Image (tube, rainbow, N blue to C red):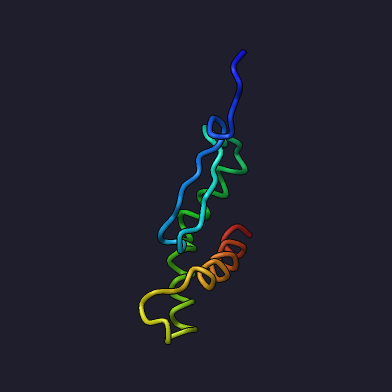
Length: 85
């Protein structure tokens, strides 16, 4: 009998760009539905990450050229909501 471990189902990444936070992703997750494809197209054309960084730096010039991850996530969440609608 083979035991399945957590590492068999998920991958854990340490992201230096996220201040060393862990990112956990399920292995072999592929989504094919038409809704997902439509959302992916909207996100690809809207480029919410670029817009989130620009808004962060515009609203907080004291950060220079780098937006802290805490603020970036806040702005990215707002941009994603507007992009998917």
